[in-house]
Length: 150
Image (cartoon, rainbow, N blue to C red):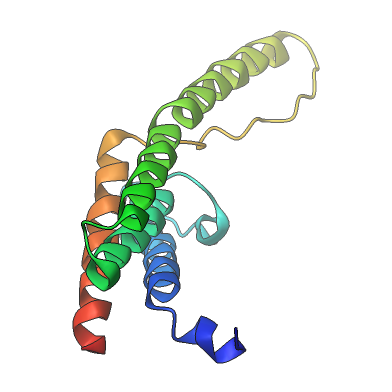
């Protein structure tokens, strides 16, 4: 394997571009909601669209386009994508909701007592809509890269 093979790997390129686009798109969407720029979103999980969903969907779709949707590799990619998207919308989402509740409890305690508690990260997972946004972004990114490469 040569280093140049990595730079011509359409599956990897599509996945990374979809992930990067999702991270960048989060900035203006968050700005429209909160009227302030949050540059930390470039490196944070959570938010619209889901970069996890975009990454695995772009890789999966590009595998299907490049090697065939009837191949075992595509089947494996679909299974991995399902696990990642389920985790992003299920387990990580619940952990984020628990962090919200715990942070509220700390604020309540702190209002009566001078407690200093570290805030837990609340935006860990994705809503189903955020995951869908990532899935659509991943599909579009892979499709465009595949068409441009032909």
